[in-house]
Image (cartoon, rainbow, N blue to C red; front, side):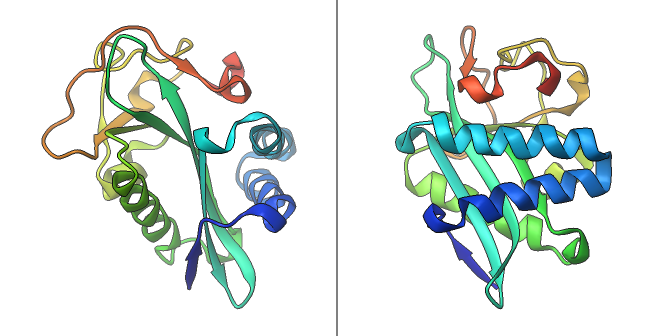
Length: 179
């Protein structure tokens, strides 16, 4: 298994992985939404505001995770959000997603990122160090449909400390149906 941050030539394959994986688990509409989200991120997010990590096995991309900048103007810490994440349907249950996320978090820590947030399944994300947080701990950019899925992790050591003030995410994520 190889982990990479070089996504230039593979962006179409990465978007297809997200579309296929979410179609298989959540249905065709969700596959279109998440595949479109990834394409929009690639097209609109500045290189310094996005980090994409892939897992490749025998030349095939079997997993991918996308992190983008979250802006908390009243807080000095560097914050990113993990969204979305996918592992090929035929490779799920092998620990690829957990290893890929850990690889990404280590890379972000080395880049000076202080806090990572995500919005998803607490049972899965707890395995890689995330904890359930409240909207008082970190204000999301839009109302949450499932507040129990709001999670955070400090990368700078110690416990998660509340982020100050309102937040903004990249434009591609600023859609109510994603929250």
